[in-house]
Structure formats: C-alpha cells, structure tokens
Length: 260
Ligand SMILES: [Zn+2]
Image 1 (cartoon, protein in one colour):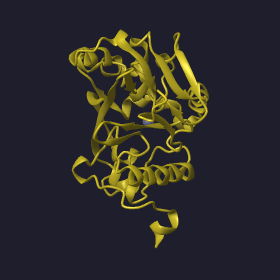
Image 2 (cartoon, helix red, strand yellow):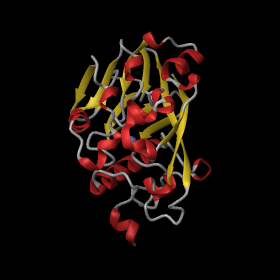
Image 3 (tube, helix red, strand yellow):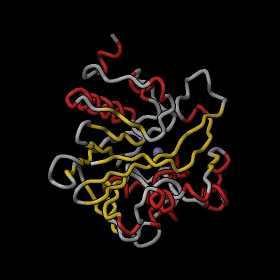
Image 4 (cartoon, helix red, strand yellow):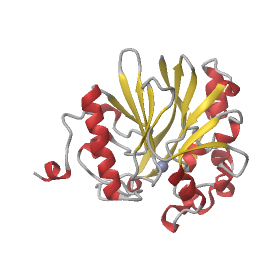
C-alpha cells in the first residue's frame, strides 16, 4: 500500500480563521491544499478532492462574498484530475472517495470524478445542503449540485473489511467531519482533514476560528490522540500550518489533564 499527498494549490487567509486569540491575528497565512491518494490492493481511495479551479479564476461568482476573505491560488496543474494524471492515475480509475467534509476547499473536485462513490457522514450532507448562517459561506452548492453517488454513513466504516482504511467520525469542525485511519505496510497514518489546522494548537487545546461544536471537536481530538498512541500513528492535517513543529501525542489526554 502507498499513500501520496497531492498538492492542489493554496489560499491565503487571516490568522483569525485558525486561532482568533493568536497574536498574529491581522496577518495573512499561507494555507496549503492537500488531497491524499491511497493505493490499496483493492483499488485507489482518495481523501478529499480539493478546491474547484474556478475559485482561482472567478472567485466571486463561485464563492460569493467569502471570496474577499479567502484568496485561492490554483494553477492549471492544481485541479484534482491533473494532479492524479501527474502520478499516473486516470481520474476514472478512482472508485472510492472519502470526503472529510464538504467545505469548498475539500469538495470542489467532486464533479471531476463522475465514476466514484463518495463516502460522507449523513450529518455532513444535511449540514452542507442547509448550512447555518455562520458556515454558509464555506459551502458552495455548485460543488454537489449535480448527480453524485453518495454513500451516506452514520458512523465508522472499515472500507475494505481488512482494517487498513477506516473512516472515523471526527465531528467538531462540522457535524459530519470524518478522518481516515490508514494502516500502511510500515506505518499507520491518520488523515485528520480539518479537525485542526495545526497539530501544535490541537495539542495545546487552542480552538480554531471555524468550529461548529467546541465540545465535539475536543472529544474528537481526544479520540484521535488515543489512536495515535495505540497505533504509534502519525497525524496528518490537510492544511498543517506548523509542519516543522509537529509533535506526537504522548498519551490520551482529557480536558482535565489539559487544565492541570
Ligand atoms: Zn473545512
């Protein structure tokens, strides 16, 4: 089994999105977009699909007023179809796509993978179609306003029944956010999507600016950290802001422990 990270452009956004209490609020941050490709003996699995290329060329039409806050940069080579071809994979060969959630920077490539099944939590689909006002700008109806083969989940899923690619609900950022446990031949990885933007801030229990439920988010952090410890797993966040400062989970933490 192989895991590849595909770089699919980036955006710049204010630090407040990532931590509204950080002294760097008021400055712009470079936020990478990553999509992950897993090569499993039973087929390819994609984790997320990146942003739609028109967000870079025609942002206001696609994203509306939020385009002023999120400045998307994507070249012609940064679309999901092009990135897959660059590693020798035809978009039509992707049968399984696990969507961490359906925000615009994760779900924009859905339309370029018409043969695939898209695994989402049912709560995420509902939230994406009827988002509350505080997350309305983060969902682009055009990303999923076409025929999509959804596989609606209501919890965990062992994708191939061999415990090597396991979908884990990690609500908090959104109600239906999910992560992916990937047991490679020599390493276990947890693809954490947007459950945090910086592992350092997650370890320090600093809440990001975009959060649906702080309580569910912290519970997801605790659950994932216990898996990191159990499997000796490496946590990889889609937009990791502090790649040089990533530190492993040392032991399952509780909120009580964090205050002590
Ligand atoms: Zn998000």
